[in-house]
Length: 168
Image 1 (cartoon, one colour):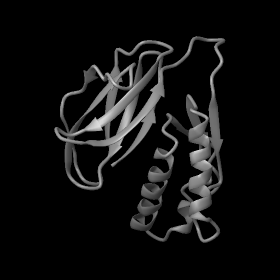
Image 2 (cartoon, helix red, strand yellow):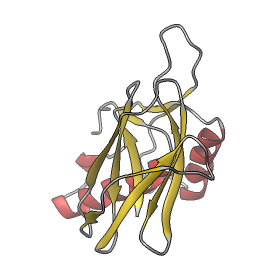
Image 3 (cartoon, one colour):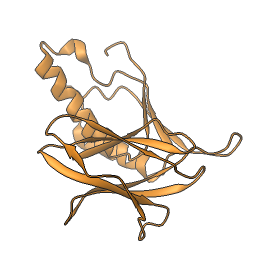
Image 4 (cartoon, rainbow, N blue to C red):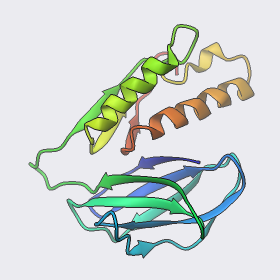
C-alpha cells in the first residue's frame, strides 16, 4: 500500500490509500505514538483503486500518529500535523521537475524525498513537471507514471499539494 495525505485543515485530514492487492483494513490514529486511541471503520481497499478516508474531529495544531492496519499487522504508518493557527510557524517542502524519465536517477530522487521527510514538513508543494503525460503514448503508460509518483510522494509523509507544470 501507499498513503498520500491531502486536504489538511485545523480538524481533519484526508488519507488516500492505494493498495497493490485487495485489502481490508482500518486507520488507527492518536496524539501519542504508542497509544492510537481512535480508529476508522474497516474499509475495503480494492487493488489499484485509491480510496479516500477522512479523519475528522481532530484537534487543531496537533501532531498525530497514524497506522493502516489489518487485524494482525501494520501495513503502513506515519504522522501528520493539523493546521496551525494563523501567524504560527510551520515547515513546508517543495519538489519540482522530477520527470521520472530517462534522465532521472531514481536513487537520487528517493534521497531527495527522504531529505524532505527529515524536515517533518506540515505539507509538501510539488511545482509540476511531475507526471510528464505528453511523453506517454497511451493511458496505461501514463497511469504507470502516476503510480510511480504516488509511491515516491508517499515517502515524504506530509499532505501533498500539486500544481501543473508545462509537461503535465
